[in-house]
Length: 284
Image 1: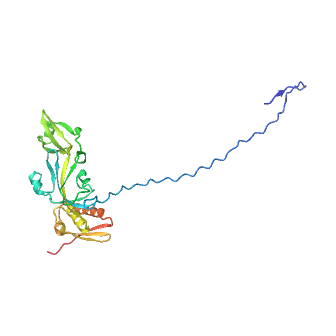
Image 2: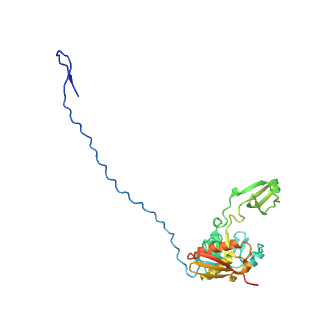
Image 3: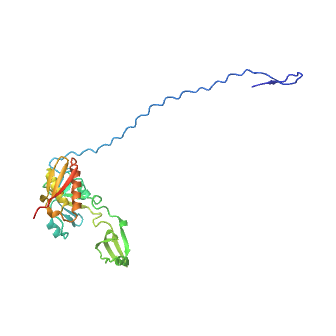
């Protein structure tokens, strides 16, 4: 603080007393502490699902199997699927053009009903086995919101004659007519077997292990109704060549079948890079 003293001298000017100024200390600036080196992010390692131990003398995941099967609703005994032609005729579900006999299934690939596929592991060949499947893993639980009332006149305008129990397609959706009355029709968009426990009677007739036999089975799956023995096949290190018989050249959806077979072969034989189809026309 500076004090001012007034001297009564002639000039009557105030004399400023000099005070000793203390040096101002410069603020100390501390060097910033060295930041700790950032730790490298730890990469999350994807844990591969543990492989299930193989069951000797039984079906395992990934196996190529030929299987006879008949599926029915447990509650009513209604058969809806079978590989046995006689059973299909007896139960009124025979379809002309369908191929009957043991069906190729690669276990775990979803080629059959999800609940059935998940329960094939452990099934022993040549044994008749009953497999029960709960509704949620079969055709799903019933959904009440999928049952609707539609005015009778609307269905008639679409050319539909609604009869209880009839299965039909409405606006691109499969439906069942549950009841008709009072100018309204109750339509159920649930699957006919929704909410029902399913039982499959299965018999594994063969577990296919030899590579050429697997390819032949894949050919039979894609080229339905054609004897797979008529196709030639040659397995190289990186390429497979499939010789197509001339009776298939003008078959329906031939290109789709060839594409499907190629995808199957490349999936189940990862060492291969190409699938070639060879078509030979012989002089008649």
